[in-house]
View 1: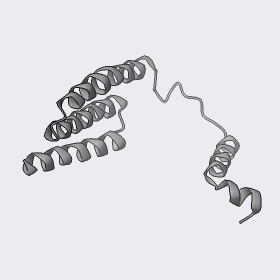
View 2 (view 1 turned 180 degrees about the vertical axis):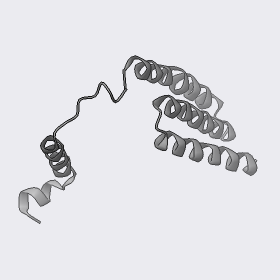
View 3 (view 1 turned 90 degrees about the horizontal axis):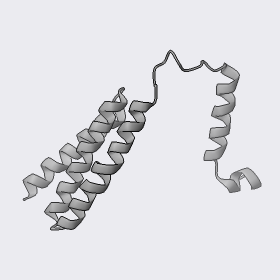
View 4 (view 1 turned 90 degrees about the vertical axis):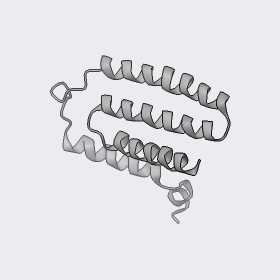
Length: 110
């Protein structure tokens, strides 16, 4: 039983890493589906068959299909993306950095 757990855990971790580091959005979605299936396998090991089936139906069946259709409908080629000026990129970086600061440190200067 523990061997199956370790195999499912390895599959989930490896497919999650493939999902994050994949350059193709289609490959990321496929890796996410594999991760969801491995997590559903963990539910089966815990004797939670209903949760496993609901996890497969809801996440793998519905959400991943929606994500796949959205990715296919979007034209994600670099030729269509407008190049932004350096000043706009710096302003976006600065405003994003301000969001990460703690509110108290901004208000009280601590």
